[in-house]
Length: 197
Image (cartoon, rainbow, N blue to C red; front, side):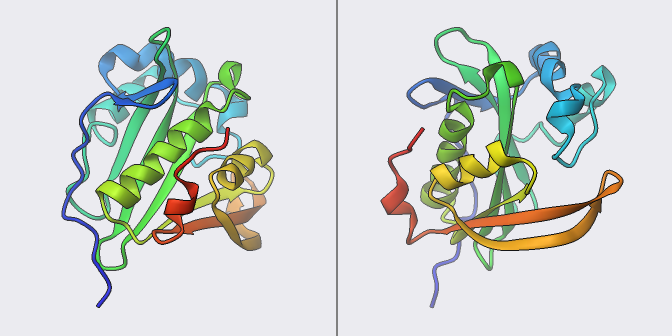
């Protein structure tokens, strides 16, 4: 019988990677979050509109308030902080979709001033580790708008395999979007433990 995912995920914070600290977001992060989540270019291919201060504060009090995962259907959003400076440069999310099927999903968003340095890859790699090694997920996916080539490159660098190209599958922000679906299985993860920036 297949192994089911664990009952919960409670990481010790901050989670350290070679250059980053991943940690829960707090009310002290409002200005840093607003600096990139309010930008139309950052929001163009992701499922949220440019955020206001009020929206950021509301999310911090609700959907971003989880410090762990205890039930399927939850999401763990972590700030991406530069270890050398303490600056918040983005955030990454791990969704726990199904306990029975061991399903999860990752996502990431970065301040454009800090793009191109491999930070999204480094943070997303750590989310794969949390999902596979700590939560015991069987399969983790990333769903990306085809026009968002930098995000697709992150998924490929992580070793995720492109499984589907869904042409004009969703009316997204007033236009048809083509979705690229990437995935990795738990038994494929050991070959990708070393991140390629």
